[in-house]
Image (cartoon, rainbow, N blue to C red):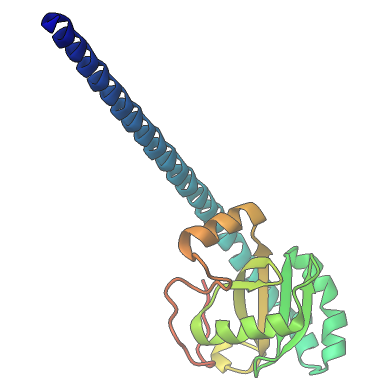
Length: 212
């Protein structure tokens, strides 16, 4: 009888130990799977950002060259000399089509927006003005508004050679970032933020303009 009780206790102990080890194993497996899933998500996010940055670098080269060429066009310079907003707004439409950009903005020498063209509605002149002010002060190369994110290039427009420093205004062209990639980039680099500026802003005066 004593042997039976001991055997029963032994078997019960073995069952409890086995159950405990099984639960522990399942817990470790679950943690391992969750950790692997998190790593895959992070890796996928990094790949998305890497793809975006590669695409962005290619677009930077193309867009920068386009902005350089457009800023030097005689008809754009002539248009800016009118100093008339309605004329500049209407007359800049062919130039916007020529640029083939998602965003096309012209501003006078003081930095006031005098023409705005976009491929999608919602991004207003007020938003463009606010973004331009930030660009002139902090080299901001991202414009965000009305759920639209643009990578932009700003070029000064001169009357004659740049060395003469006869400023006619500013040209800004930009392309819109895909919603899916943009949302991932926002969450990756700017969690909780609704407005994107340069990652390392540097204040400059309005008389110092940047180019690529």
